[in-house]
Image (cartoon, rainbow, N blue to C red; front, side, top):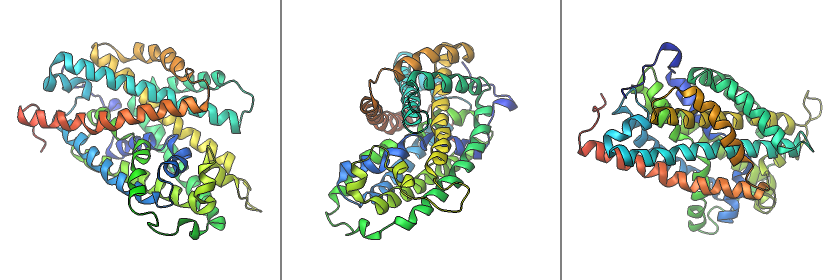
Length: 369
């Protein structure tokens, strides 16, 4: 099957590609990242781990873009057989599709848990999951251009309200909670890299979206912007949460970011308590991750079997629902997320590099201009 015959409605700009990466990354992870990093490192120096992880992800993202630009107009599901052969490519593609499906299910389950706990107390998880899935279906059926345009609306709103809420929390910020610097040495900082890497999953969507870009030459810029913005957001979040609650306070809370925003109120403003507003905004981000992974999985199936994508979009709904309902409680949901987060580190950190080296050695694909 040749490259995608993208019409104008199926193409995205460089900024839209960057926004898709950002929205994918800024999912459920930011609500739990301070806790998972503190649990792993036992130190307030975990903000350094985020910077190191950011550099690692930038390198991994560069490899993915370099690979995709050799096969312009094709997704990873289409060009991989040219590198590895049909059957190996089929197996790897199935793993990638399974990953996207599971991440989609995980995000929507976390969204249901958070919504049920803070906003719709007593509402069954299945009711919340099904509602958001049908709304997501309506968006996905419009294609990648519709998805990208909605994300362009969601992202600025999210960033504005998130930064306002975080900066207002500076009134309870205590810099002493971040001291002493490297008091336990460099080892805890290195231990904090792994959980932060798991929160940076999202750059792998460029394996799909690069094929839809109007100007693939600028894919590197899209990838860089898509990674740098979440790194800055995560860095601010971890510093403010630990500074406001201390590492002991962070470690004891399931959703430390939300608890930080709940711990203060500003008299005289239209919204005196920001946690409900921030939660509604962040549900849109989780919704973004759910929809883009649902679309990527459906597109993968359609390109493997060379069929129209729409039937696969519908077919994925019950699969995602069943996976989302497998965890019995929030702890099992976190275990599921951690398991596939670990898979992503090797799947998208190692395989694209191997594919790139093989394509160069065998002179597969066109050398990017």
